[in-house]
Image 1 (spheres, rainbow, N blue to C red):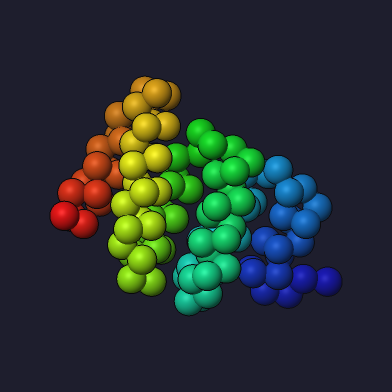
Image 2 (image 1 turned 135 degrees about the vertical axis):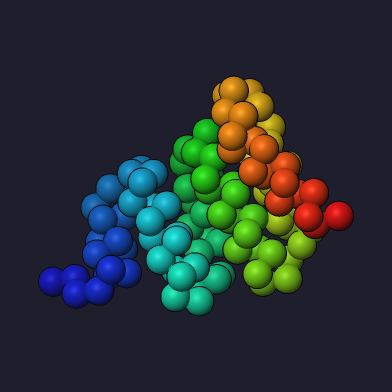
Length: 104
């Protein structure tokens, strides 16, 4: 029986690996508990399964920045900008553009 938020989210993803919301929640929980490599892995899995899930790019990029992986963060933001431009999500696009601009 899962007892922690992390355990619950892991269980949810195991039961339904294509559930983008559960995988995003797991990635964020890993990030919030300082397990940054695991978080990046989940953000990448999320993006792979659902390339239009824009929060994965933004929060994945922020996580990579925390790890000092600036160039990887830049690439993820650029991919996210492309996705949000194509999908017409101007708010998410502007957030990623702002994060990208801060890297320069």
